[in-house]
Image 1 (cartoon, rainbow, N blue to C red):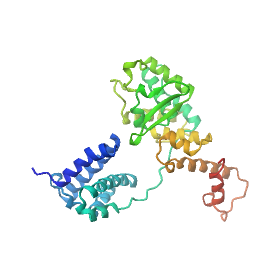
Image 2 (image 1 turned 120 degrees about the vertical axis):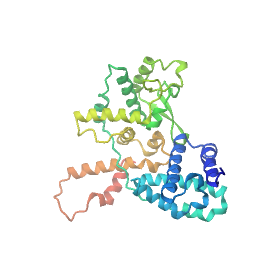
Image 3 (image 1 turned 180 degrees about the horizontal axis):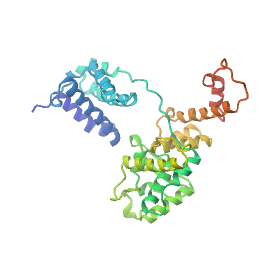
Image 4 (image 1 turned 90 degrees about the horizontal axis):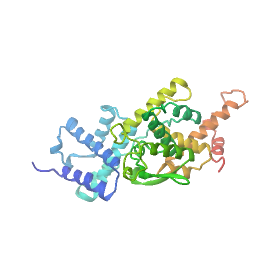
Length: 339
């Protein structure tokens, strides 16, 4: 069977360009792969062109727009997922501008497709009291309960992403004053995260008990499963949900519905924000590429301050008074409070 130009270029894009030239992480490559697989599926199901016959000339701006509409209407993808798939498509056609310039006009038409405005996601997080309740749920008398307690404490203490926690090995832990974790995050960027003395001691005892301080264990998973392999993202998510559900039975008001591993990351960021840590430090701590990703915590903190102001206001209710959300002067003052 003759290889099509699409097959050739998509293979080069996935196996050479993303990994060798761009140095993308395995997670990024997997996300792009999934988007391309969906695009190929769209052409087979909706256009009637199977993968083995798909060529570059079959791909037009109009068909990419139809692909995005198909994602939303047929596969029930939200705007954020739609935009993520479009980002992968854009990456491929930016690559093609230099590999197949004879179709440059069409590639630029595709690259001109805009992302769709998506509602800002609500960042669920736990308060200090909620974290104490949440961390009280693992059974410290069992081996699995001890592992879960240390893992969840590490997640909150480090503000690490779920994949970063899954990828941790003993070699990434450096005990000292302070103890630090060397975390490899998005884009293979490495950051150093300090640990408090109490969290450090908890982690040391766990590692001693599991013989993870021995040199031969350097590349073992820090938090392994029953088969001594590393926990999956889904496995960690299930553990977080288990203890969140357990804590909610005790105090439903403290524990929001839908707590995820990323909620624990949000929780750490909010604790830092409330303690007066500036956005630049929080950005570096979390491993954000841009401070714009970190500003969500400042907005959330300001919203809480404004809610408190409204609850304690003695001014009589009046429909003609402006909403605090439109009170730019007050909002500006709060945003610059303490700077």
